[in-house]
Length: 391
Image 1: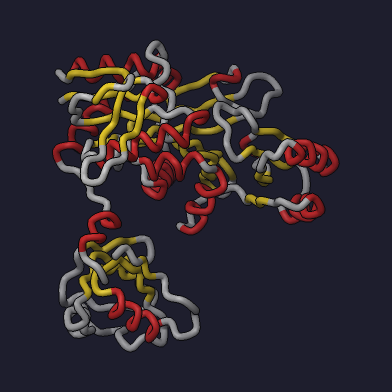
Image 2: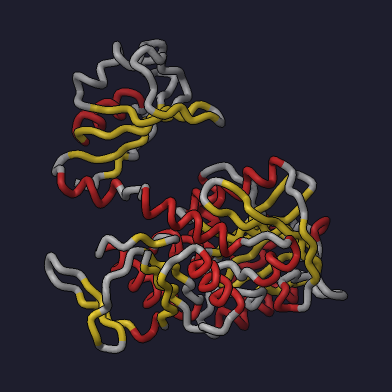
């Protein structure tokens, strides 16, 4: 395959290792500086220019998009997607994980462990927010920051108030987060590739520093994850829409708490701590992804006006509880059930004889009007239906 690594640092350890892994597996590989692209948006013929020249055909792209160029870098990845080039991580996944508020909102919806977090804009809401979290100490985070930059531990309410006032005066948006004291100076980083954790390490902060990032002098050691931590890391990456992710977790008394999901995790610390060829695992997955690509239904459904995807929650007043998929009338309504989520289990492509139960969440594809009418019947008191119209 012809593979491009999007990176502004060709000499960086991670870039070099990915390049070596591509070559080792027999691929042609180039390192391309994201900032040297021009996006040519043309009807029916989306393409890219590199150094003002038409870019030769590529089979796959490995994005290494830094935080400082998120907007432009993800636009480049999105253009590759429009051109049908296989991308190791999607533009949506990169954007979702890079925005700390958005990412934690996504995780919270899926009932996955996160530290209690509050986002405030008004000056007079700061102290009440800190009190809601149980009082100081609290962690203050900039919405965009990497390698521990923009993460501050405030030991008292007064100090937290002063820090937030200063940051907000420079038009910085900040999160206030409950401090998990039992994990002070320690966290877990797991590298997820596809649907598995390929390597994990524990990071320990240096001295009195509470941030355990390697870039801040922290030490690392390879670890074998408990199943709960492994599954949490995989779910977090999937929720963000990332094929490859570095998932940072705190070891709290209540189990794993997600701190951050990184779309371009550094490889140096994890490979040296574990001895695992993480770069090789990433390239191997890219090969599989290109041979059997996932599709974005939201884009495919624009071809069928009036059709879309919806999640239908089966409430206790639903008329279809206890009926089989066949007898519930979905086929007559031109609705296909792609999966049923029941508790912590997902039933893919359920059989016609499968009974629908109270509390099920049905992931459906079909005519939106028909799905809306079904949602209204099952959620009379819950407001607007959660139907996604992509037609």
